[in-house]
Image (cartoon, rainbow, N blue to C red):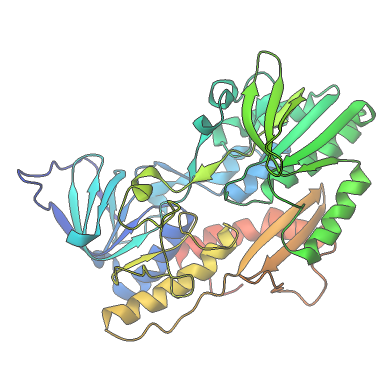
Length: 414
């Protein structure tokens, strides 16, 4: 059984340390649990602490299909306690401050926790309030997002009951987790509009802050054809800066000209701006851009040799996906164990990531690439082609790999 610390332990006078762990992982999401499960098999659970306040754990890659009516969203969740590595101490509290000069972490409950090695893997922060009008109207007035578990159902309700008009799908100027999701839900919506017989009276717009449909040209070639086939209007370098629910208008900044562009909508799906959690931004571990600073190959902090990181909060120049976490976890595992023994760090991360891009019901392009945007494909066929087999992989295979492989420290495959 995992050791669970349920009630916050107040810091003593003068901020004295309340507990200590050999390895302390900040975050019990995909990255933290994957690495924790691997470490437990090497270190044993007693040396490991996991800081995570959440009671529920979500497999977020399926939120696209849930938002498209394929799955009940409840299939994407598990109890957090069932995933904490056996023997590890679950510190059921939120991280509030990182104090690397003292080898300590301070929690929201006032605990000061010491460590020999720190792994920062808290995931990403959704900045709903960064767009005026969005937080107040999300889930209402024709506005929704699959980036919120709460609103996944609302997204499907809006899509399946849509009677025509203008459907706008956005993509922000910030890094986001699973960047392909903004397109995936749009392609599913387009299919549903056709099935419902309303596509001929619907204008679908993809308003994206990015300069093109996709950053890797091999896959962009296919996606441009998908957009053309579906008759979707693309507006690149358009960054959402305001939502006006009373008039059902989405306001964008054209990033090349600075011009303000207003697009009326009947349905608005927002991919919200995202950032590293605030406690990371204000810590000495942050890079100038606010993300966790890491050597992009060793995944160690460049200034604190006993600090590693992985997952969405890092400043790594690659797409933030579960597939990236899977590869990063192996690198951190090898390098942390080497650092414990005073050895040179042997493992290097090449930026590998994967994005299964659903292009409709029963169709998927499996993009896999590295830091150089060079395709690093797993299968012996052209993965840039839309395939039903790859759709089944996302729908059935990858969830099984996640829950029974990554979350249990058993994943040794791709």
